Length: 320
Image (tube, rainbow, N blue to C red):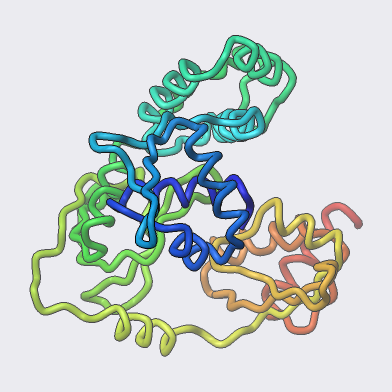
């Protein structure tokens, strides 16, 4: 544990106790007596009111009505926070209004010199979501679908949900167990286990019009859900070996259900294994586009003939 982290943890440890000794600090943080004394002196210098007691049973206690001192950020920590804010703008993230008020509060805590550094960084750094014509540090106005925050609040309380989904011209309701909430190609999606149909389902958050806790007391356990999903998982029919260029492309974009396993410690080669539903025209077209996006730095171990045919047909258009 680094010194700064140890000091912060030690401050919380001390503040939660009426009395402590040097020996207790040494055992709790696995440090020497001299280090424990230096850390305590540093904590006192930061403003925590400690009172020393002499004698065989002596030690330290925190003065009554004391609180932890004001949190202070280093220059690097401030830059890390605001660069993270800048990098995630225009991504339709939840709690955007709270992030804006948080940014304003943090700006109020730092010095003018630190604020000037952030203004300079804001002028220099451009990310994928940055609008170069209006790169305001606090321009966090790209609000997500209003159902996203409600969905998050609901799933934190209970992942068994009753959702209403707008599908073409009708509204359908589903009882689900939420597996993942993810963002793919600028669209938030719900990956869920349909409790009635007992199968995996994907729902765009933009199509949700209602989210409620699932009231049924007798529920299928998470363990049983995962067992049923594993039993229904299709056999792998696409196996690829990826070189460094293909891995770089994979990191830029890949379907949510696809992952790779690195085959050397330098992460320059990898194997991709997954199942492709060749009877699903939309999925077949998307996978064909994605495999072409990966480029030529791949070696095919196994591939359905339907995908191979689509790739050859697509290439023939450019290489007659």
